[in-house]
Image (cartoon, helix red, strand yellow):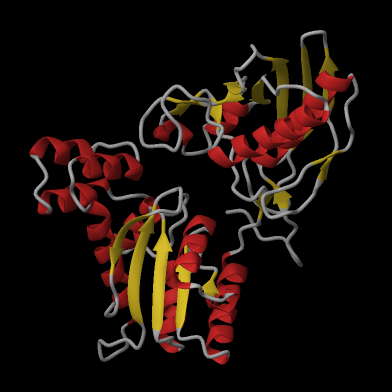
Amino acid sequence: MTRKPEGALRRGWTTGACATAATKAAYTALLTGRFPDPVTITLPKGERPAFALAREALTESAASAAIVKDAGDDPDVTHLATVQATLRRGAPGSGVVFKAGPGVGTVTKPGLPLPVGEPAINPVPRQMMRQVVAELAAAHGEAGDVEIEIAVDDGEALARQTWNPRLGILGGLSILGTTGVVVPFSCSAWIHSIHRGIDVARATGITHAAACTGSTSEAAVQRLYGLPESALLDMGDFAGGLLKYLRRHPLPRLTVAGGFGKLCKLAAGQMDLHSGRSQVDFDLLADTLAGLGAAPALVAEARTANTAKQVLDLASAAGLPLADAVAARARDAALGLLANESGEGETAVEVMVFDRAGNLAGKAPGWPA
């Protein structure tokens, strides 16, 4: 296990942020003949980091720029990996087209947020790169029709240290990140901050709090209920750390919200939802589908599925409320951990399952509407 560094932990940048910065540098050179170095980008939450270029190359038909990823103090397998973007002008009207260069994987199985055959460049990094292309194209009177090829030095070897091969992402790494920032993993520090969030909520008279696995579900719950910032508990993957503290320091109402895959783990009684420390129980999902009346073929397909999303898509196509059933199991697991010695808890719990776009996919109510 990687030891936590002493003192304050230093944040880093995601592969998606590095790819975006490399894209901006390369496209600027393609348009102007000059590489900005360092190159500054704007992240989804407004931060503006600057990145130094590790290498650059310009020909008549293409421009390439590369950046060495700094993951801060996070024990990330891609720390110090070199992320390169190569840009070429595309056919008129083609828009932005993404390609997987050496070291970047390709999606080969269903159930991921990208179609089979697509480069493993996740949606938020794609949007960040499209944004910098659009801004530069507008500034230089261009249409913004470009091909973006992302590569990672030694990415195929690095990917073998990740879950990518099991997920059917072959040939290299995924280009990831929803905020552009790598927050170093420190379980004790994160759980400490969760506890402090509960303390603040109690001290400020909050009666309804939300514990979410990520920013998408948090934003969706906040929109739904209009909760103040002090009611948003930064649970992340640490469901157990949050629920155990709430057992001793209860709040009247708690909404637990997250993506289907994370909440499948909670439904199975797993209290650490991180992908490196727990996995989706596909047998449980298959058995749940069977209990909902699914056809034997669907149950068998779920048992050997590649991702939780694939199972949810199959259930939705069959008109079966799998997300509701998983939410109910997750709620029961949470209530079990909240129960005191007498078998009772003081916090009412509802569970909401959201898809990647922030739409409600399933719910287990915790109190009267």
